[in-house]
Image (cartoon, rainbow, N blue to C red; front, top):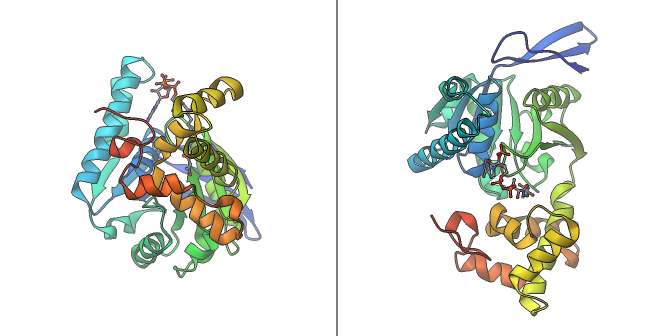
Length: 308
Ligand code: CAA
């Protein structure tokens, strides 16, 4: 399989060589369900790559929030002369907003980007499966949940795949492409080509809890929280050690705030439960902060305070 070049704006092609010869497949329109931080970033990068996007969220304020986030990013990129106002206008014009899940019906690929919870994601995928075009691909942006388990909620497990984007989506170059047990090779090839056309790098991994990214990242963040809880050092010192000693762009506590402490807790719970090892046990301090509503940047306070 090899990725083809885009022949028309707004179309992502992959040439798949099968028994019946070479056939061209197309991802011309995507729908993204869930207009939080990740859904909004994913919508932005697809629109910038020339693809028509339908962003779906039942909550009216979520769609407004997502558009405001994109507008902030676009203003910044125009100020820095990274994009022209005309390029921004054209990206914006490719985005349609919808509250009803039925709006995914036209899409060649639907990307689920709702809250990191098995039942929530299965429910959304089940609903999407009912209304999406029969040949459409269903991708999930889960950060730790089994793709095979999520695919089982649908009638098309061969066309279900993990497409794990990283926050902030417009900046981070990686997409972890996760193949479930029943994901077909053609689905993987189409998604790999699609990620490349977004200007990002796909890395293919198998379906294990937390994949590679969060199986490695979350134990580090969790250990930083244990250090804080045990008084090994204060929050600034812990983050400074990792930034200045290990050249991480931000410290683990600030990164936890960026990801969302509730998301971190859910990922650690999945790792501990599914891999059955206590080394993934979430720090009690993390649980306490989530219970108190200190969720990180999105709530205005996590390990650090965020104004505005
Ligand atoms: N949205 C869009 N763009 C953003 C942004 C955001 N939220 N935050 C920063 N940027 C852009 C800036 O506009 C700037 O763009 P230009 O280079 O075009 O000017 C660029 O990113 C650098 O930003 P800053 O100069 O303001 O700040 P910085 O150099 O400190 O970088 C950072 C900020 C990109 C967030 C950097 O600190 C970083 O890479 N941190 C690590 C992020 C990370 O590890 N993400 C993965 C989290 S794990 C995950 O998402 C998956 C999961 O399943 C949990």
